[in-house]
Image (cartoon, rainbow, N blue to C red):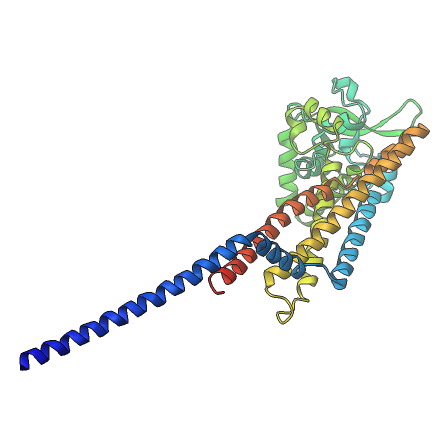
Length: 394
């Protein structure tokens, strides 16, 4: 009897556990059924849910009045930059370019014919010797004038000129790119009796280097002043030539092949245009950075959902402003060039094309691509977070 009662109690406990498990399974099945039904509804209306999330993203990143003010400011600054750089970089003749360059004084040929060792006053008051053309025919140099002359004289190289041009000025010589041959530049006289720099005799390039070394190391303050003044004169001369009509060749290329440097220049690839494009791009980036930083300072975490969403607004401002400025620049240049063509005035065409903001357009293309990728990445993250919240968190 005792054994029977014990077995009955154990059986009741087993039945209770089984019922509890059954009820648990039933609850789980009910939960699964509810989730399945909810998932089915979400799947059925997924397109409208995604559209709603997308609408939330657009609303969160929409430009407000403050953002529009930044957009107009950024666009205005970009347009002003285009005009200023286009005006500053207008090509002029050599004399006009020299007058416009600070430090370019009144120069005349009056050399004392002291080989490799002109006086400090001579260095200051005489033209740079590598500008000499007179006498070049006697040595069959073919340096002529304009761009060919600058491509064939190493003193006009935007990079090597800082070395060779400075040494030429300090020793009253000229070094040509073909074989790095050098010649003494003395004062000669034209048929009308005017004093002019003249390429007069062969010089030794190694002696030029040695003479400059001695000036720096052995001739005390005077020697250093000569090199310092020569370097200053070289800097002023390169600056005055860069936006002259002929401009300067690209660095080093002319020492390898004068023809290649001349061909590149005929396609607009000279130092003046390269510096100009670089300046356009650099100042466009600077304006974008300033606008981006100032706009970023206005971020308020109590208003905006996240820093990334606010950054989307900043990116939109920069992309839109760059696009508007570049488009207006292209249209304005095209209209001005068309006026020049219709009137048959090549000067108008040259001046208008000079305002074409190539560097700014390059920055605009980069901004559009990079900003689009950034916005897409932020939008993807936003959609993922919102979808997770709806599907898994209810």
